[in-house]
Image 1 (cartoon, rainbow, N blue to C red):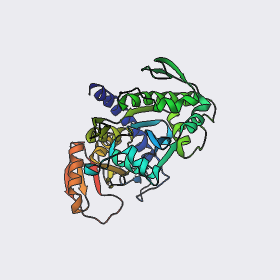
Image 2 (cartoon, one colour):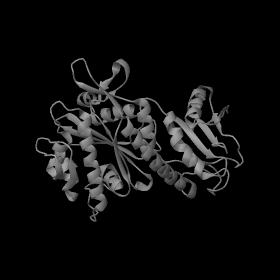
Image 3 (cartoon, one colour):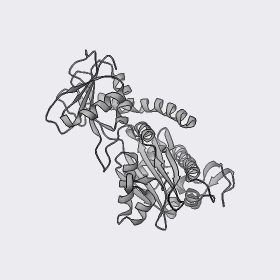
Image 4 (cartoon, rainbow, N blue to C red):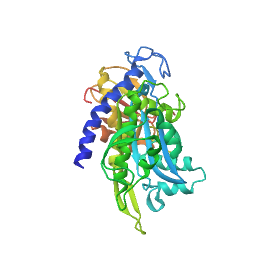
Length: 364
């Protein structure tokens, strides 16, 4: 927990920078999807839609078995991003229907689609794309920048502890290899080392073909993006146990996952199980830094920021959290509690673009 807390402190600082970049783009651009008739991003009343954080899940398949799951997210402008690792034995579905993601994948008619939906549920966010990769494909993907330099923390079959130069054909075996009796969390730590090494190698490569395949979509786009800026890699916080047959299983720590995801995926969309509360986040004090500070506090309240901009004026002394339908009052109160400030206000209006409007006042 101490290590995780330290990670979150560092991650929060980086998150604020990421959020600032994203919202600065919205506020400084006069092109794109403008919501209001005001075209000056510094003027009261300016609003624009916020583009969701690009996301992709990479599923490692070995003879029909799901052995690793990595969710990739890109920063604004594809300048860096994050990798979130999920144990394949993580339970998805919840309650009596909870099923390991690996089982959902194995028995899915559309394996990639079934796994993507289950991972979305486990993380509480929408994931735009899914890619299935086998050992041969891993060798192709990493080939242009191989060997990857990393330090192996464990003595594994075929991979002695210490400095390691990972060859293309070794990537698949490295990602799936486990010692007898060890927790899958140890394997995920080694997978973190792989993603860090790959992103660093792509960042240092001069060859535009450092990652084979597509440039604008798919894993080609995402790994290139990771190499274009700071890349962070983390495993979701989980509680480990065993099932009735003695098989390991993992339950996501929902509160900790929400905090982590709100940082690593600053502008998520809702998952297939249910949409997040759609938020319109407005600066009502004339200080754009308030929007930057508020965004990572709003998202953990199961919220999705869809519109950002300026309020109708800049002299709001108190923050208002306005809900636009009676059924949204509880969501507004949850956002108020997460934000730590504000008055919940009933503001009925016919809108399908957002559920709650936050006007940040001088108290935020």
